[in-house]
Image (cartoon, rainbow, N blue to C red; front, top):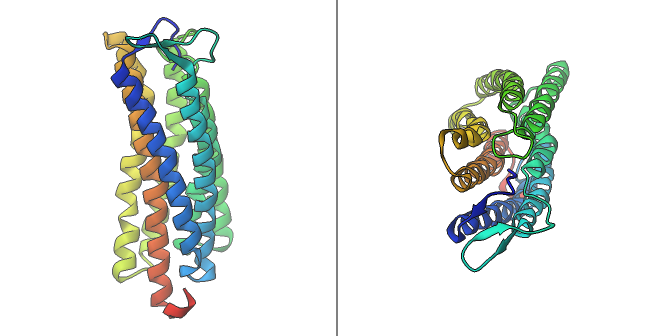
Length: 268
């Protein structure tokens, strides 16, 4: 968010600084996890882990850039943080760039663990990429007009947000089908873990539109600081749960399936 007339308390500034640091540090730790566990599953499942590695690299770099953008946008005046003269204003644009890279891969990687193959996999890959990218691009356009920004336009912000939500709902329908179809082919612990991805997905992905809507509360009298701090906290929690936790659950499922299919411990 950008508002040159606003200031941030020491506590508010540090909360955002810390949550962004937690975000990219978590991605770095998860990157190591996915690299080290890639061969714990059969080759037919390993593409899921490979895509998780790519997602972690992208998220790590762009969340780190987001954190640098935050620290460079403000200067401490002895009492609070105010926009630094001549500095680039803080923006969520880096997050959208990250999502544009990550979202298609996050959606596609589940297809290998769900054992969806052939033309059906190709169809899902196209649909996930199409709706996922348009969801992010329309949301990216909308955030330029959110309340609190210099070129604020609540109507345009809401319209682009609604368009983005339409693609978002299509993604939710598709992922629900994939998870239900995949779990129907599984049994035991693998089925339980894989099925649990659906509630995780629904909860973590709904956090994003909630964070998108956060600036609206400024029109209801809430402060810029309350809005921007809550938005960054929600976005980061959503990123960690929808990328790291989701990826770990896919890896665990793939490992369980591989053992069920006869993969020896020594091969892992």
